Image 1 (tube, one colour):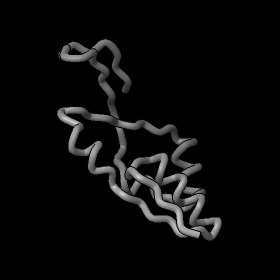
Image 2: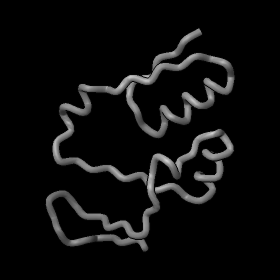
Image 3: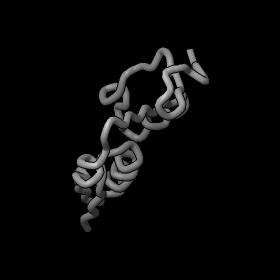
Image 4: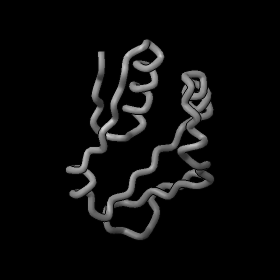
Length: 87
């Protein structure tokens, strides 16, 4: 059996690892439509240490594909002032 997942994102990475661990062949395709229509948008995913530990138990080296976050500033659309800050 072969499964195709569209979109290279964290959810598909976890799903693909679980399927591969079950002996199923997986193909990941980049979703070019989303990439072409995403203009000036940024998305950051922060993971707790428990989530990182879980992903590593599943054989996903999240530290290899991500980086440590020391600080997060949240802003409303178009505003430069932070309404929330995490350190």
